[in-house]
Image 1 (cartoon, rainbow, N blue to C red):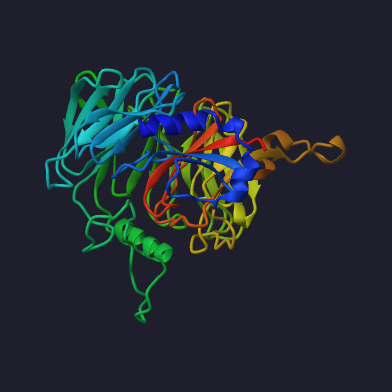
Image 2 (image 1 turned 90 degrees about the vertical axis):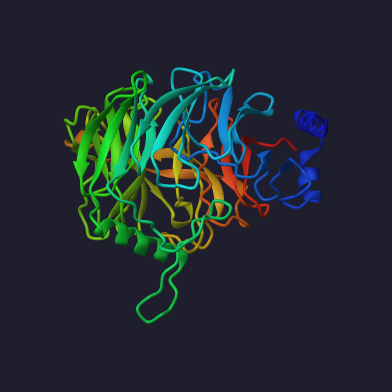
Length: 440
């Protein structure tokens, strides 16, 4: 009943002078599920602060095909969020599972399980009907496997497996509240920052040259087929949202050291490097597909930590676009609305690569192209990189965010809300921020 009363109050916000509410209350009020951010003027709704909540990584699909439901994980299993009423209901009570993603064509939540007490053991993959909760077995895959993605027609899963496990942080216990405990020291014994320690541990894993493979799993038969074998650190698999046989993957490791972004067909052909470095310390990463499957977008820095761009590569034509970002606009992750007109950025703290003094915000970005002066175009303009910049709007104040927990923000299917995970109230929770500014 208490939840129902709060939901009614949220629906009736228009009856309250929101400017007065924002002025009279702090930016965060622990006893409320809805408020207006005092610094940005945007409405925020607490979706869930249930223990173990996980709102999926920024490039994993969390929505049903018609966009009416979002799925997320809690310590109890899988929950579903009604995108119209904001009502949260349990889908599957099954502690210990790992939610993978939602299907692109069917109302299905895919998840995996490992044997109790064996975090690197063999993986069993299941599918749960989002409406009924009925569960079916998909396949069992080898020890050390990680399933990352499902293709556009839901016929194939793709994953990667290493021949042996290597923890990124030796001797570390389980993470607390979703925070990965990276730590390391310089040769003189001084402790590294969290960001530098993470790079150090990533490089150790890369230099180990552990044999790996990318493989697919047939959703109907469970049959497994190898796509690629390598001693590169293979990670971040993402099927095209429209082409069922096109797979993007990355070479993981320190970004200035690896050629990160690649595509490949599921039969192992047409392996293509998406971005080639042209200067020392140039980095590219945190790649993601556009909703129409035509463009791969990624964070580009030339050089690292100095010049920031959101870059796009059209897979069909090879045409490139780059939007410039100010230092304070650089974000851990970016995302794109369904209509492909607006980007978001989830900000960063001052220890991260940009060393930005004021980047702890959830941003909305509107790209602006740089026009030709006086309408005069170079003869080869069509073959050059199209350039632009980003106009920003601050949506949520992340001053209290500990960025060891990355917000991993995404647009709602209708583009009206930004969904993210944060610890701005002291504990990990899932929130929604309204794109439109609250009426005063």
